[in-house]
Image (cartoon, rainbow, N blue to C red; front, side):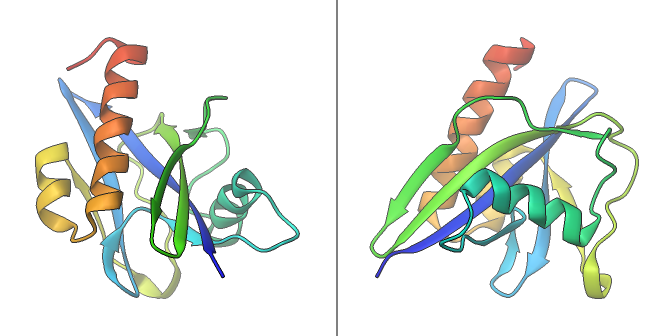
Length: 135
């Protein structure tokens, strides 16, 4: 049976950099994500993650209406949406005093072990650069 995971790659524009949010979860630092149930879509799961954790105010986090980045590995299918944080200086509110980091792409790659998730971040970087005309 295939596990279905949905998450959001949250970024902020800072100076001339694109920085990504990683939170400390069960498997180390990763983008915010959760398991998709049969009753929901991946986008519903991403919305629920933000609502349940109250990570950011709804007006701060924008998830543009673009298709998700899909990465598949063995028995896991991951859908990642891209979310832009408008108020980039406001810290996220996380459960259980979880830790978080804002990192540029090269540091994200060094922090992650899963090459499928790294591929999702590289795809996100290309999309963000083209939409927001940054490098």
